[in-house]
Image 1 (cartoon, helix red, strand yellow):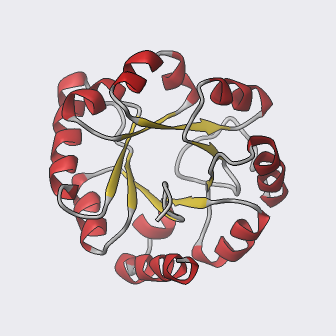
Image 2 (tube, rainbow, N blue to C red; image 1 turned 60 degrees about the vertical axis):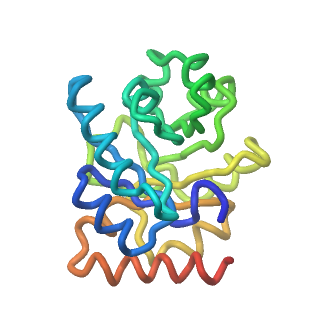
Length: 202
């Protein structure tokens, strides 16, 4: 499968990492906020222990130092975290790097870092975190994909399974999903729906 997989859930706890790994999810991002260095290293190490020996790729959000020390392979940075990160150390550790973008300036900043993928969001309105940016809308996906060329494009923000076909048709290579899984009445069934899309594309 490509990296990141077409279905790319973003979760904030080890319980979710374990649950999704058992369901056979190919790429999972661990996004746990407000941790100190010790806590970050602990949760990243524990998450890697969960995914070890499975096909699941763990993407560490923000905590690049913990990712390097724990031996992670994949990293995702928001713009603020990118500004404070040591890209030479990240590359030396052979971490793949995904970067969030919301506007033209952020895309330029991201591309200068030579990322392994670019994320665009929020596509739709999202209640999960307060956003400085208005919803981007589906046409922006097509525009962004033209601009980044062969770099994989991840769409994120308020996306549900029912939107998937339209989002992929617009040019997204992957869809990052948060509430459609974590706030779903039957998360396991929802994950299987998403994984079915992956199987169809394989």
